[in-house]
Image 1 (cartoon, rainbow, N blue to C red):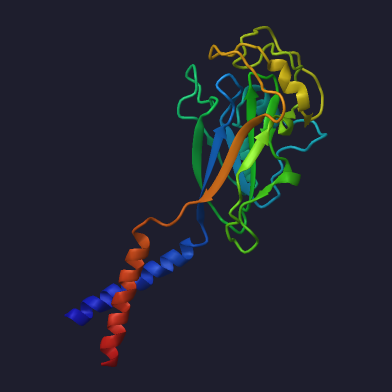
Image 2: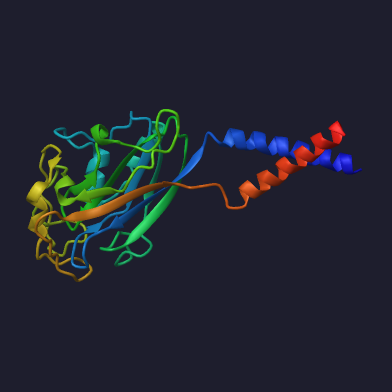
Amino acid sequence: MIFQKLHRLSAAAILLSAGLAGAAAAKTVEITITNTQAADGLYLTPLFAALHDGGFDPFDAGSAASPSVELLAEEGMPSLLVPEAQAAGAAAGVIFAPGGFAGAPVLDPGETASIRLDVDPTSQRFLSFMSMVIPSNDIFIGNDNSMAYEVFDMAGTFTNLGPINVYADDAWDAGTEVNNGFGAPFNTAGGTATEVDGLITRASDRLFFLNRQETAAGTFVNLASGPNQLARIEVSQVPLPAGMPLLLAGLGAFGWMRRRRRNA
């Protein structure tokens, strides 16, 4: 009877270990964004994030914005980017803030939010992200393919990627609207946006036109001079549940007991 129980437990251990070996190909990562602005700083729309094989390229500096990028840069909506990324084989999602203001899930200054994505570490290795800076017209943060961040190496090993610090000088101008605040989401200037047919370029000092403008939250934008950090993005690998190593160790012990009985 004892031998039969040990035999069943050993078989269960084999099945479980086989299942875990198959699951080892998939890994879970947690992507966290923090709006690092001061209380009277800028806001960020929900962050679009995708892990891909390097072939997904949402935008290129010096090129016209695609409809999906224009929608994000002008309205903060990633609704076209997510299916585009998924169609390219990427694991993609959107990081919504837990609070926001006026019922919107935007990232307030100082606020942090996260998302977890299940990825294939050999084919979904590189991180791309995008978020609109508000209350601008069409300024966003993001990285084009030439700056994709390697989360896993070619062997599928986590790279321990350090924090990605995004500064005002790293922001992009989509080149689709005049930067005057008129018609921009969450901007109290009102009016109607002026559409233009420009190219994606570095926003550079174009963010500073927002200084002293009132936001929908009732604050007045006050951007500090010098390096002005907008966001910090962190990527971590989610470990196995805490009890899993103990469970595997226990099942391994049962297997050892079975082998010992056979040899006795």
